[in-house]
Length: 627
Image (cartoon, rainbow, N blue to C red; front, side, top):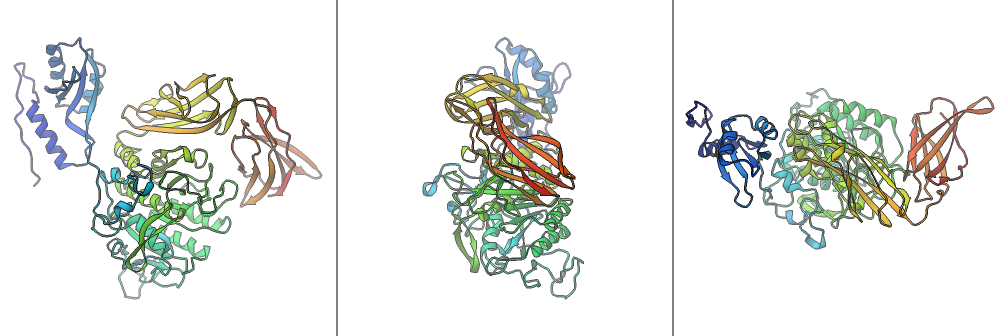
């Protein structure tokens, strides 16, 4: 039987129960011992009384909800800790409407950051950047902050679709997945998934149940995701206790067949594995892989993919599998220890979601050893480990709740402005705090904010009026447009509100940030780049217009030759007999170099021009294709 703390609740002269200070403190501490994941004290809260409220008046206010004064903060007269017998959330709401009260808030539960004892943890700057080896302080994913809430559990599995895993590595062995539905060594496909005795995964190269690594690449990725935490040796994974599923489809040289990768995704679906890491790339769009990703999405699978290492824009030069547009795909770029985009890393404002540490990452390697490696191959596993940590923390969440929380809690940095969709770096600490607050399950949910105008990459003349428009919403607080805070990296605070205009922006390249904080203290930001130039004329004509067919999609790419456009105008015509007709136009935001649509069947041609407030560029020539 669980221990029960019984406390005598004194009765006031008017017959009302009052929770006295000592009782409130003991009850609060006992509750925290029983449930370490409490978000706030159920018996205490913080109140700031106005100077006009007398001591007798303050006591009367407390008595309304069975409370009494516990302590005052000497440095701030009126700031008081009080007890309560009623749900503090209800009390706080009442107090905020009570004359004599300046503010009231929950007595939140906070935790000490958790640091593991793994011998080489100090070298893992991507998890906790203390400035070691010339790095930038806190340019990391805030892993210790996340671990103070949750370090993982063995009920979550991540598939490493790669070269295999060193199954006997001392820093991985305890976390290697064992198929719960398969009896080892009986030569029977017990779980009926088409693979006999697949105890730790499958080797699609050799067609057997021995997915051992003969390259080292998969083992390195596995350690980033889930090296055993707090075991006094080696390194620690983002997720201390996750189960690692070895799905080998790349050979010792790092080459493999896309058909086997597709089978690996389907293996995840059959086994109920909700996360996979995919630090590989090559080839073109595959309808088979896209379909497999969609099918796996139905059971909640999130496919994390490395953006690639050629330093190119994936919006213009797609890299698969990172460039699949399925919404259960997370595409990951790389940063270095100084918080700059890694020089080798691909990027893409429309096609890459976020970044994570990927330069000089120390992790597990073959033969029980450790090695430092670089690449978006190392960035992606940080995100895969984080997705698994969040899934473990909130096992009833959908893939979209997990994905959205990962993306809306990034740490925004100027190095990624205009380079990845979120403009930021994975922050698993923020993600778990948001999830603890609710994030779609109950409790507080992080707000959303979007910059509607000006467009990202727009240019304006010095001294001209710039109109800012944003939209912010929160599931608890509703419309928060009026609370949006606008700032510039050059000029600082610009103003507040859903719409505002200014003529005072300084000359230069601005990063404009819109931020909003909800009543529960959760903050979300969005950012764009804005150029303030001395003179502004019509933009230059785009060049290099190409039209390719990708499945049923028409994919237009071009080169942006101007930094002062407000957007691009695309014109489409369909060929009927010998004539071109059915002219349709579409507008695309500034700083774009990609447009996709499904035009229908037939032969179409497209052309494009840039535009701004001063006029239009000339039209490009037509690009023609059949669909």
